[in-house]
Structure formats: C-alpha cells, structure tokens
Length: 299
Image (cartoon, rainbow, N blue to C red; front, side, top):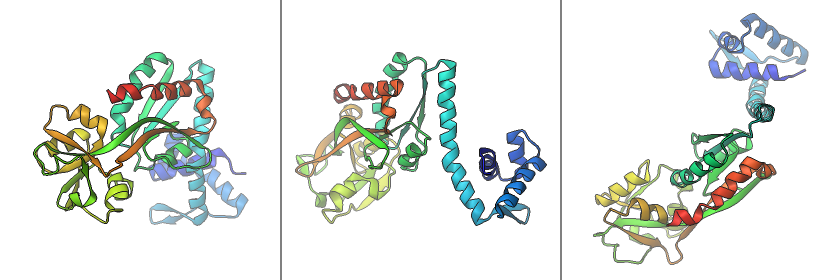
C-alpha cells in the first residue's frame, strides 16, 4: 500500500540528492529507507529509480510518485498545521503570497493594523513566485494571493480590494508632459522602464502597445518603483506605474502623469483564497481590513 512515508522519502531524496541525506533528515538509517522502497517496488511490480553512476535516476513510475508527493504532501502538512493551531489555542497561520511589485507598499498598510488586531495569528509573507502564485494557492503553499490579474479556476474566490489606474510617468520637461493623454505611437521613440515582468503580464503591452501595433524604441526593467521614478526624473526614459504610487513616491520629483489612451488602464488589486476559507475568522478579518485600506491608499 502506498502511504505518506513513501512519498516523503521520494521528496526528500529529490530535495537532498541522495538516500543517505534523506535518511539523516528523516532520522532513520539508509538501509531502512532502501528496504521501504524495495518493498513498495515488489508490491507494485515497478522500479522507482535506477542507478546512474553514483546517482539515482527516477523511472517513469518514480517521476509520477514524486509529482504526487509534491502535490499531496503540502496539503497534508497544511492540514496538520491547522490542527496544531487549534490544539495549541492559536487562531492559525496566515500565509500571504504576493505576485505584483506595486502591491507591497499597499500591503504594508494592511499588515500593521492586522497584526495588532490579531495578535495570536502568525503572519507570513511570501514573494518567491515566478509570477505563478495561482499554483501556490491551489497547492496550499499560501492562504491568500495578492494579484492584479486574477485567473478564474474552480475552487478559488477573489475579492477586489483596491482600484487604481496605470499612468505614464514622464519628466516635467518631456515632450509629452503637456499632453493629457498618450497614444501608443507616442512611445515608439521612447525608452520604456517597467518592473521585471514578462511581456504577457505587462498591461502597457497587452492593453496598450500591442493593440496599437507599436513598440518602444527600447525596453529596460527596474526592481522597484522608487528606482523607476528616479530614472524617469533623470531623463533616462518613461515609465508606467499605479497613479497612487506616482503621487506618493514621485511627489518631490519633477514628474508628470499622463493617461494611457482615452479611457486609461484601470486595474484592481484582488485577494484570492480557496473557496470556503474566506469564512475562517482570522482570514475574514484580513479581507475586511484589506477592503478598508482603499480610501487611505488613495490619499
């Protein structure tokens, strides 16, 4: 019978690279692990891995079991954490994932009052996603996903919490500074500075330049909004940022804000959760506080 221990062995061998290291991590002997895997292979008439020099190479059956372990074990471990929280009298652990660069400054306005209001809840912020936080949410690696680009999937629920407009930031002396609206061909001679995000996730391309059949002269990236605006203020290019961030972080810089197209590019920060979990008290409290930060964020 396949059980959790077999899956754990496969995951630890994959993580650590050897049966010996996995055995040390699991506090058992290496022969004991080998025996467990051998019994599993005999029971099901398969081979899980083969010797490849001094290393182990997974068979197709082994690859399947490893994928199963990576999918199932996080859910089991999450269930154990929840039960441990209830048993210890804590309310729980809230793991928040973020996949958009401008969201962090907004999130900090929610975090401080939340930590005060829910002192028994552990709060974790995770940002190490290659812009694929949906998988982390579905696979129980996080409990809340902050994203401006929600992807509708069965079992997920999104709450819009903060609306904003993406605008073009230019130097006050720029040729476009006197315009109220920028059109796609206005950027063909410009150096465009954006967050380090793939083209298909950049609204300036998907909602503005591509439909207008235009491209900037050059495209470069910067890790933070502050750096992007400093580059624009130094006349190194133009950038696209949320309007409220431009008002706050660019207040002391010689910058102008220009609408992108006649209707602008309107966005919403959404909070994604697994369906039904929005009723958990400490998670519902976070959602309520997040919805309440819109007015403050626009000041």
